[in-house]
Length: 386
Image (cartoon, rainbow, N blue to C red; front, side, top):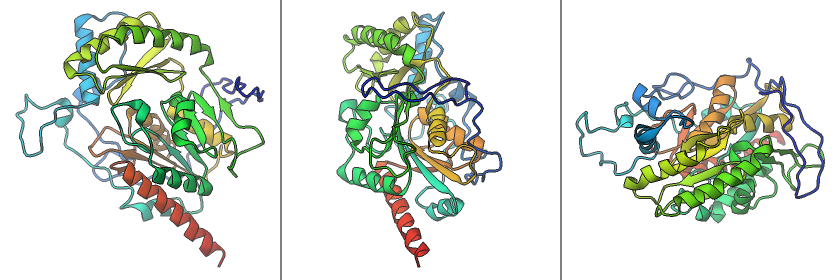
């Protein structure tokens, strides 16, 4: 991790917290248990893809150069991450008709539900810590991002989970917005892809100290993000279906409701604005382009920070489990894979290039998995009292 102070006062609450240094931290020792290799993968559940797809799915470099060819390459990448108009499985495609991701043999990760006992055996004697993405993981993906509500049953399940294990929501959303969706004060929340972290306000037995942890490593970028948000709103207002979302430390440009033939307009608008901001970078998820600061901070760094805040630095007896569905969650999956500790679980119905070890198909399966964790913990507690 970078040698920098990342904890700042919360301007809303007036709390002045001591600065926390993350330099030289070693949360994941090399002696930690290695996750089992997923069948048919290159290790740790990583599904290899063709060089063509990997090229398309690289983070987009937008500063300098460009033109029509650059925009076309962006649109190709947008299609690769957000496939539409897919043929049914009964319809065969010729080689030249196939999309890049269809050239690769489809390999499915083992199900986290079917292998639940195996996962629990790997966690024996260790403290499980849960990290959960929001959109596509706790709530279904919807056309209007402002209506991505989680079900009451899911909320109840997550509340029960937090009574059993330290639990964090790690989202690309603004922290305040994702909190309004979840409404559970006993959780940790990491918004803006981990650039805005706050600990539980009440009700968590895992909170260290009396004050909530606050981490905002990209505070200096706030004025710049606001400028970019306003410019992108103006640039995309004539593209039907385009929606620009200010997530405090990043800006999301949603094109889920934009006709595919208009995607180039979205790409051009983003490029024209971002060319003026060399300190910002562009990445993408499912039908969304995301503008973020260039600092070395992501969901993987947020996971490490939270583990350290919980007192699990340099521990071999901690077992992090991260569940997510998008490309930005790969940063956290990669941390777990490289440190050989805990597991990443990908939420997807199709094969993807991933560092996760297991999979779940949709939020309903995520809820089933979380409930099984709660039941397992309760049973283990009862047995320990016998």
